[in-house]
Image (cartoon, rainbow, N blue to C red; front, side, top):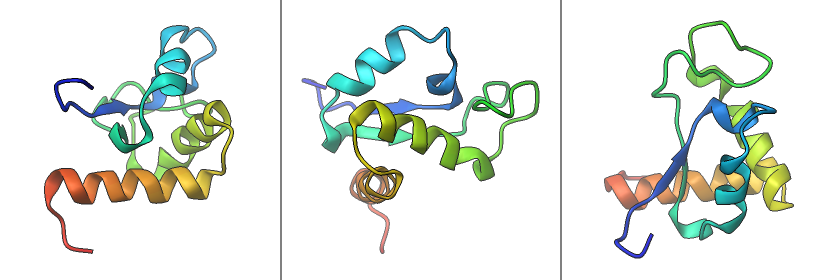
Length: 91
């Protein structure tokens, strides 16, 4: 984060045995938080064992929202804004 890197989380953030991810999610600056589906074999619970899909992002968003104590809608908006800023997308 000090070097300007974003922290991106995939479905593994929803796994019960993921011990470090919740710690990092809780401590990460919101302005540097992202979500992803790049890991084809790490879909979120309840889709474990399937190929990952962007349709599963709401599960990861919900897990992050619960860890951060906010709403899934707030996390979705925040991570979209971060992606727009990082990649220079038009909105």
